[in-house]
Image (cartoon, rainbow, N blue to C red; front, side):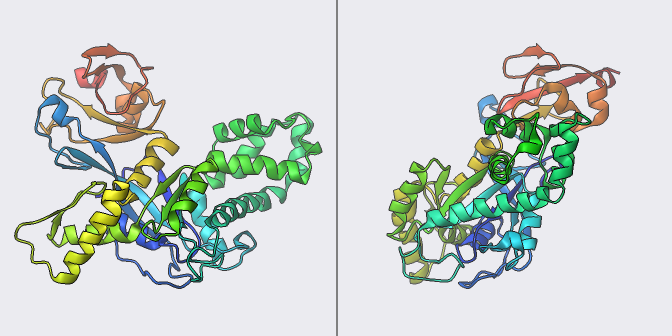
Amino acid sequence: MSAPSYSKKLGIVGKPNTGKSTFFSAATLIPVDIGNYPFTTIKPNRGIGYLRTPCVHTEFNVEDNPRNSLCLDGIRLVPVELIDVAGLVPGAWEGRGLGNQFLDEVRKADALLHVVDASGSTDCEGTMCKKGSHDPMEDVKFLENEITMWMNQILKKDWSKLARTAGSGKDDLISLLEARLTGLSIKRYHIIESIRKSDLNMDKPEHWSDQDIIHFLDILRSVSKPTLIAANKIDLPTSEDNIERMKESGYTVVPCSAEAELALRRAGEKGLIDYTPGDCKLTTKNDAKLNDAQKKALDAIQEHILYKFGSTGVQEAINTAFFELLQMVAVYPVEDCEHLSDHKGRVLPDVYLVPYGTTARQLAYIIHTELGDSFIHAIDIRGRNRVGEDYVLKNRDVISIVSAKKRG
């Protein structure tokens, strides 16, 4: 199953040896090289993870027939694209390590999930060190700095010409920046929001100092590449204080154990346990033949991670990245209002992830261009209301598009 073409991409980033590739493998069940040494990930891995959301079929008391997603015990799992990027080291923006490859992949991501070793047991280069001897806040700051300086390097190449052109009134600064930065998946609204927050003089960009430019780009980085901290290795005793400090610093932080999630996913795949990603507990199957080591490992995960933290955090991190950072909503388009089905009779077959603010007509265009062109109105199934083209979709809406083509 692949993620729909309109979906956003989440980059899994971080320095080497933080559990980044373990996180990716746990989320996708794609086997990747995992090791306790820098640059285990040489080429970026791409895979499909899933968002977890309550399925609406239970509310409407129908049996669904998912097509572009999965439904397990009332939980709809919606595919999303994840990119496991090469480990980052200081100086990547200057080409150090695998910096150029890393940043080229970051360019394609709509949001970043930064896997941090919350236990402080890997130094700034990703080499193992004494637990608690490294401050993970340094990793958070250095990643931000690397991306900001990379953007600065790109913009500074022709900044003087760009600033003079904008200052002369031949073209506006926003359009010039949009054209220059479009290859980084930076949109016009990102630039407008960043300029507003920077409080810099748009009419005189030629007067911006080097620090003004970096200040602007630092804001643009946070706006265009929103980042969530996946505080990994929560089972280690040195992690908890570090996690609290990261939260107190204002970051969106999700405590997690990628290693535990990978173990649970593999046990579930082998039929040893019943486990849906994001569950707060696991259930051993009655006919499962567990050896002593497997039973001990599963009991430890249950007691020290699931009971203590509520989950392994991997699924929560992915959900938070898409639903909060990227502000996506899940909507269920149907054709038959009575049976909640498509033209083949499949009940609630598809879930579409769209950005908050998407209208009914925009959804019609996402489904098919002709449906958008011939849009008449839509029907909000839950409220049985006819809504117009400007109706803003809400999370878990069930919606039917009425078009001239459909009527014909």
